[in-house]
Length: 304
Image (cartoon, rainbow, N blue to C red; front, top):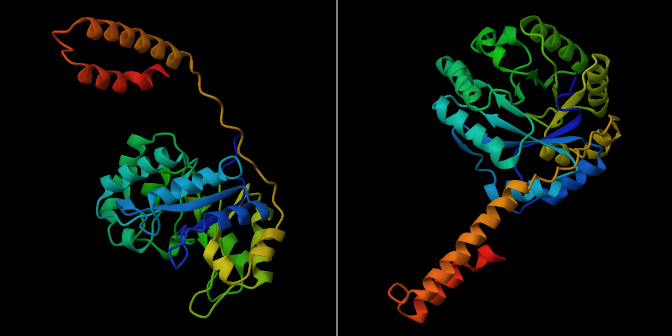
């Protein structure tokens, strides 16, 4: 059975620093040095691209990490335009070659229960078999506004946000999250742990180790940490790097089968050659050398 998001994955909100400078190189280096197998980038927000960085930034980053770590995406869902959110999610997967995708159903989706199923219906019309995870609250029992029984059938894995904010019991919280979600729908887990500070709280290194050990004890193939910037600001990179997981490196991208391309090129070259003969010999059509030279310049790239 193929493992879903194996090893360690770092979640990233933006590829830009607060000053607007691209930090993709720093992220790439930290992923490689820290023993990560994947990176999950926020690519969409509602029915539009993530404005925290540009599409060019994402394409540049994808090139930097190609062959080094797996590339995944996540999507902050709002529910105003379910079809639009599904369309842009599918476009993001195709544009960036995202191997797995996660929908983030939180407060905006709780306010729009009527959008929860249609969004996923529309997504599955476009991506019927693409790996899809639900990255939402850790305890379904606390959030009945999420239509868990209706939406979980669309997903291939759970990615609960097990953020033990204001608490100090990550293992117990992971166990409770696992028990509740598994009882609803038994699919693989790739949980998300807390590597950020909020309202004066921050995870201790001992708690991070405890959460990591619990995930391993439960037999999960992978773990995620939110977030790159939070871990950086708290100085957690060395500690997260010390958490040992098998590193799963993407396989080489196979060379495409060019036989059809070569046949099409040969056909076009023959047509261009015939067109050149026709135009150069027909002065009723090519009545001046300027027009003929322009045509040659236009078709010249096809002959390379």
